[in-house]
Length: 277
Image (tube, rainbow, N blue to C red; front, side):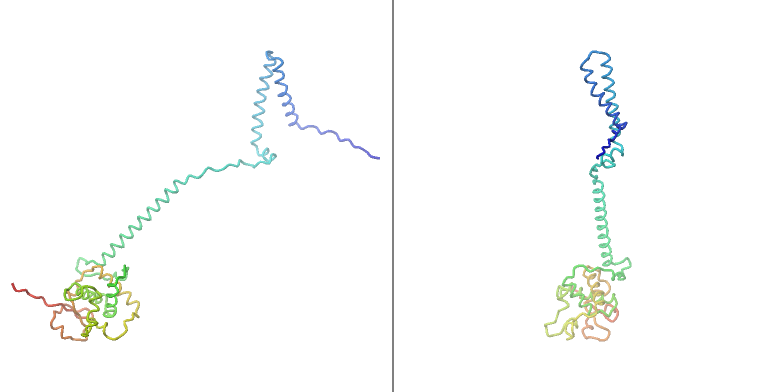
């Protein structure tokens, strides 16, 4: 035997009842307004419904903004919106300012470097040459003249002090300026190689290897050579065009004027010729 159990109908919730009642009133109100448009009672009812509609709409709108409504409806807990694009104009201005500062810093650094290098080739107020900063010199373009002069200083004076190396460089450059010698650094240093009468600078004809083995010494004389080629005043040898070591006494020295002795080298210049009027 089959037993059928009847289930008591569920009572509608208060919210549903209120909504149903409201809908019923909202549905009936237009009808009342159509059947008796001129009746005061109907006008009053219509105004009431309009006000009720406004209140209900506002209430529903307020409820729609609550977290509970969003949760029930499956909406995000907060509004999802797209952020407006960030104004990067001030960032670009900051980047441009930093770039300008970097450019100014580079310019200042370059200027300071140029002034430092200029100071190295200048004479101080006492007329002496300041060679203490020679180790800070940065060699620029390594020209053929620089290579020839650095090589000559390496083989002729690497054992001398910096002042002694400058003195030998002066002799070479003084010869370049003289009409009695070739007008290039390399020409002066290589003079006599193929003449059969011997070289002006002995290392060019001594039969020994010209390989550079002492790198530190070569780096130092290279700086001296570069400074001298930049125009450092030649004031320590008295315009000398000749020199020899203290270990020898060549005959040609008797025909010249001795100017100074620096380290192991003695320096000479040509005698001044007096022109008869």
